[in-house]
Length: 236
Image (cartoon, rainbow, N blue to C red):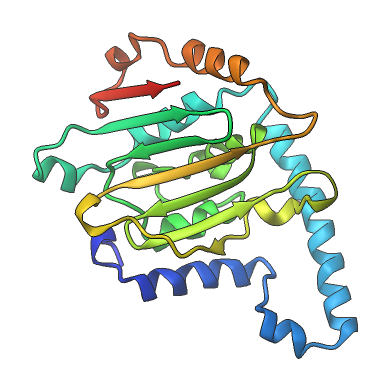
């Protein structure tokens, strides 16, 4: 499935479910039919893997990492074949709000390899096709410095990662995709949209500080150093 625009919603859902299952996710039906001991064992394994994943994520994506710049770099590495055919300039747009951060890019869109790569750490698609994955998946996962959840819509794909906070935090949530229903309309494709839900508790970054971070990390002259992207827009 190398052409993202030819992937059907049913195929996209199957790809996401496969990635989730590989990380220990089971459906509610299977959960209801599983012995309590099996569920407890699965929970323990996920918690231990989550502890290891959290350490790796913190080591490779420090608190000072510039997640906005990471997303720009990842967009720069994307393919924009269909957008160019439609006469569109490759772009990335950030809409920074107090309750959400919406990132849109008219890249070609996700394929199976992207979903597999973004659902793990230590695996990446080919370097020439990094897209939103970033180096070993860390570039993308830097968004969890500021967000408890991220909803990804890319053509026929619609899924989320939910990290949570406090007692609801799921450490494996940053690599376990969850199916969502809302798809990008056909007339708006190609388009990849990521909606970030910021932290609400003590870890939250004040809105004014978040805006300042975007302005600092993405200077007006950044496009001079990029070869693919032709437009970067920040709405605050």
